[in-house]
Length: 315
Image (cartoon, rainbow, N blue to C red; front, side):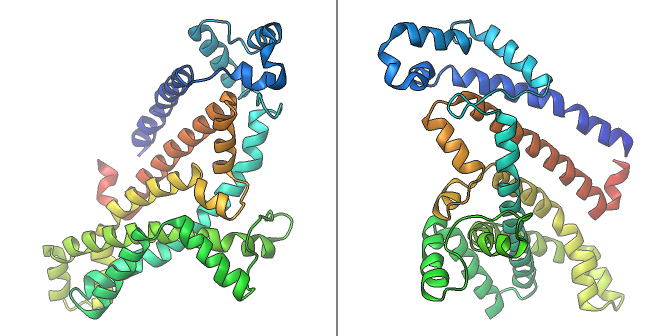
């Protein structure tokens, strides 16, 4: 167990280092000059542009820029936003809780809807329940998230007046209002992931239900509920947990369209604004934080493997 954790933790540093090299290298290939963007109306003044390039170390070789940036990262400094003139770490601290709340709620909807539907679809194979679950899954995969978000705003907010159409209220300010402002975008995001989880859960359950240990459990006279939950579902959850970890990581990286439709000030909107304005420090900081979240989620997923299937603990 300790060796397993040690090997996984040892992979975090080289992974993040590789990500930092790729991110910093790709920024130099992006078209446009950020110094010109920052200069604004003074972009025609070559002296002003040259001064900005010198302040931002854009006149230095790329390896020198990277080493300087990496040294700041190791000291907990993600840099300053060139456009907003604020520390990137402060911007991340402001936006990450918003996207984290939205992502967790969306993942909750996905699991609560997708996994039970997948189990029922597999257990009731070729029945009306199976056809209904597959139809709901096809709906979730086919409907664009931005279209579903607009329809929900028109129906739930405009016509019925049940929930606010947009905006965001922090949990620390008013948790009831916060849930009210995030439940619709969370459902929109979770709907598509629920369909994916349903399909994978169904496939994994069909494989598990055909195994010898399930037939043995039934031959022992165990109740069908016990056979399905304790024997079939527990083994079928391993690929589903893998997929769930990846989907949660994708949610945390920022749901751009959904955040735009519902005016949620999260990671997605911040990244889009940074790309448009060539605000490289913000892009680099967000990508690094996202990569770290992905790595940590993969570690948590591996630990869940051990909890779900104890036989893996000796591996």
